[in-house]
Image 1: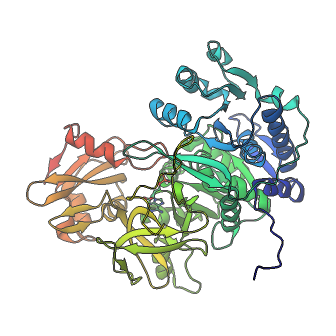
Image 2: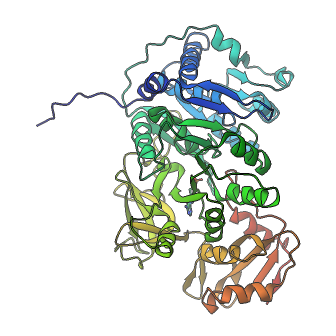
Image 3: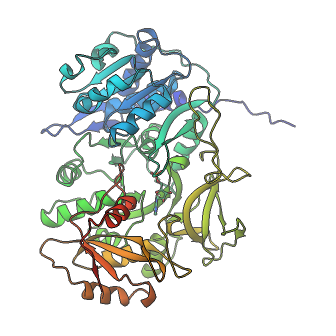
Length: 548
Ligand code: AMP
């Protein structure tokens, strides 16, 4: 028997209509680097998104599920594109502006993007790629920047403001199949070609509802969210869509992502919430330690994308800023787990819960697979590869125009679960603790050493700013840990001292023998430790390694 309920498709246009009417007065504030930030209401942004869709359809000829790319910072115009493109039935393709040129070219061609909306300040990045981007027919430029860079382009160039001004704020949004493609994002895979994850209207709608739940980000129209996580990194963790459901104000940093302007915008605009990877929070902490600013408005901060070092959480606690640890992936939209502790715990026990990767929401099922694929118990001890499934979890990658969906066996199980490549344990009460990426675990003499545990212990040392640990080949043990350390200003390298500090926290056989001080830990395009670069630097003899 079927239900008697109405079958209303869960589409992005419904979120847009809701946000621009019910929460029409909520604000998107974009940092300009000048005295006055730019402010636009949800009603205005929604109206402009409607004009943009109209222009894309009537003037640029975008139809069906054609792809429209964005090469943009976090700002109001990018939010407009987030709603205009999926609502009209086209596919929003956010481009990661930190990727190497050849990867960007590969991705645009694979997705066959017809239009790119670009911030003027990013034209120096886009212009040299254009001769290699035959599918791009139109370039829409927003904000300041040197248009002369596009002089030789075969594509037609449009001004964002002029384009949208020339079209009416009317669009009869199509009733789309909720399972159709709304947005896509390529993972910056460490091996092989990048892989396209395609989000549906339904997945975005359901994910947005989860983002808004108290057990996740849990915000409402009294909040303002500082979205540092880039809009090209898994849809800014779902925030731009989610805020239109609940009226949360947005504070967008545009290109002002350095610690000093971030500290200034927090002090001046007083956001109650923020989201970013640990590297950003490390940088901000160093900044406000050196040049004090009041950042205490941020009562609730999501930290994810990489493990949260305990010392970082403690340092922010002292500033009255509560970090909430989250785990997710491009393939998971990204909300996987969030570490809100159960109620009624004493402080120390609560802290140990907050340092896990967190608890699963209803929409994400998880299991742990052992070395031969056997399913392991949730006993807090049995470590295996995390596999997940749910309505906002990828079941395949995009195969390109006319191509089959890709389901590589190392990424998807035969029964359809996503293999995350993350290794960890799950406690009986459903809290996930990751010990490592499968490929970063150090396999020493048949035993596994967690690189993350060593990093966290090292980063608790008062003279260590950052630490990354990787496996390096070892004749006797197969692999051993190499610790690379960034020291705080004025500190000097005393490896014996650091090793003794670790010995108080870590089993002796796990302690690194190989050490190197580095000026900075190499980072990926989304600000995570790039361990493959460190492994290569070691293999190429580029590190000044001391063996104890
Ligand atoms: P990406 O798709 O680039 O966002 O990368 C996803 C990967 O980031 C995951 O598979 C994890 O390895 C890592 N990651 C994300 N969040 C966390 C976290 N809270 N702790 C540890 N690793 C994380």
